[in-house]
Length: 63
Image (cartoon, rainbow, N blue to C red; front, side):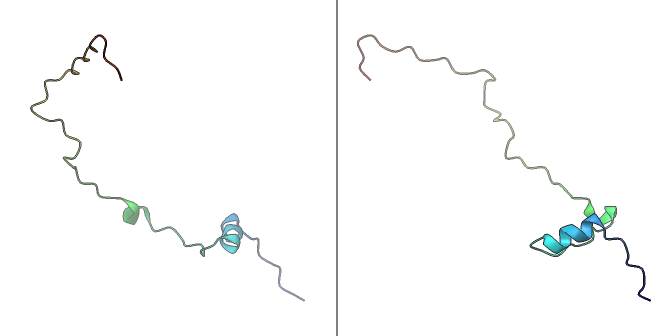
């Protein structure tokens, strides 16, 4: 007699049809990412804190 076939999991199905083979996920300790603060989006210290005034168009000015 043949042994009873084991059940196939959803992950195995996706692995068979994926372009890359399925890899088991690493433990949660290894998945944590380390972030470093960047000063790229810091506000300019010389900025007054309000929007500049909209310039008024001069009369008879052609665009």
